[in-house]
Image (cartoon, rainbow, N blue to C red; front, side, top):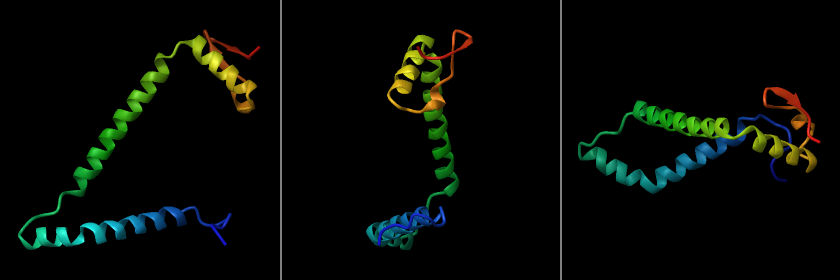
Length: 104
């Protein structure tokens, strides 16, 4: 039968989240239970969220920094190459040197 073509967009993320939670619980559950019974504590979810957002900001900064540092000529020729190889008409217009240009 397979995966249905139409359906709620949340079904697949909910499924794999539940699956990963169960796998982690089965793999690490007894170790966590021993740690808690010995007086240990669980870490803060705020630390998890904060570290995740920090790394997201770093990755986005590096990505946008690389994109902004690319010279116009390289960007123009890359877009023209994508256009001629069937990447779609959405790359038909782009800016080079402050003016709109079309690939040759």
